[in-house]
Image (tube, one colour):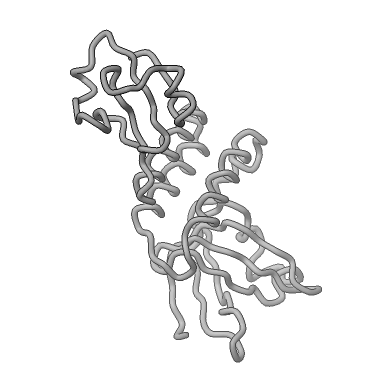
Length: 202
């Protein structure tokens, strides 16, 4: 692997041996990527105060020995997002988003739109200008869209009637069909519950 540089957000870090640290980044150019930071725990100059969870950095990395992990050679802090780590509630939200990203995307698979989304919600969460619960909904809905799992909330999944045209009716959320169903198409609350449907008011 040739030497490369990319913006990255730190998702996870794991102590490795006495001095090294294995770090998983979500990078702009290469997606999820795990690197080893040699002597990161004893160095007071190279990585001091840089390799913190959720922080955005500019990294420089290259090939390791043999088939080992790529080596983190340099990391320059871009956005520390330190207010997140100072608040347990914000930390919980950021950790949840990190876990979704870490568990969903494959290694070395670029996800530019998701990177910018993650960077945006972390910035808003850090600044405190947006309610965290609202940011969480925003992230989850856009994450579902980007991952191809967004539920259909715009029209009836059976008759295709647009949501804005469904008036004074019960709307059913059908989990099997991945979207809403109007009252005319629904089999009724009793049967609907058994088939993975949940009734809500329009």
